[in-house]
Image 1: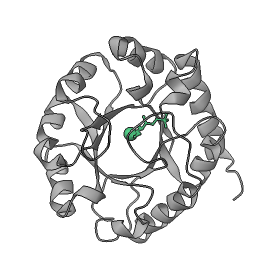
Image 2: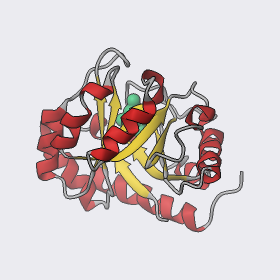
Image 3: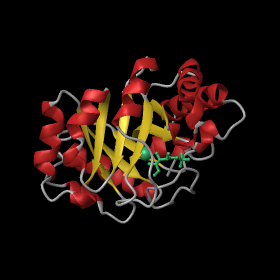
Amino acid sequence: MSVLLAPSILSADFAALGDAVSAVERGGADLIHVDVMDGHFVPNITIGPPVVAALKRVATVPLDVHLMISEPDRYIEAFAKAGAAYLSVHVEVLPHLHRTVHAIKDLGVKAGVVLNPSTPAAALHDIAADVDFVLVMSVNPGFGGQTFIPRSESKLREVRALLDRAGNPAPVEVDGGVDLGNIARVVSAGARMIVAGAAVFQSSDPERATRELRAAAAAALASPVPR
Ligand code: DX5
Ligand code: ZN
């Protein structure tokens, strides 16, 4: 399995999202990560289905849509119609997670579940066989440019082991504070979808930053760093 790099447009210039997408695609981005926030589940408010639909018109790679919202069930269909290829929902807000995951899959979209830093990997136990991917938050969701929480590295290993025990080869995604300094460690811990916001879009050259992060991830896959 290869490593997919997913630049997060949260840290891009919202007045020029098309240019941001084109730059990271030139740098080899595998996915575009789109952060949806509602001001309830997280303190920040970002974008909704119309913007995802606009991104879908310009992007040539799949859209990875991360729903940081209190009532994802109400919006899943709208984001699927807008063009999400991957759709992830937080376990913390969903009492009927099994129903939600299957509703996403029934729409023909890859279904992911997300764990906040304080949510144990064990919360996945009874849904592990059903998911298409798992997203481990390595910062508290809500803002770009935060510092990677070190405990996330062992959380990635725990989630990988849990999926393996369920017989599910679904990839593990990591989101928050990933940069050139720690990308080798998260890949070595099992992450195969890597989100990077500030490390890409706060750099002077997002195309080059994407290329460098992707190369570092591929190198770590070939020769993992020791624990
Ligand atoms: C945080 C978002 C992230 C964010 C990552 O709530 O879910 O996707 O854009 O940005 P960086 O890489 O800057 O932490
Ligand atoms: Zn995200």
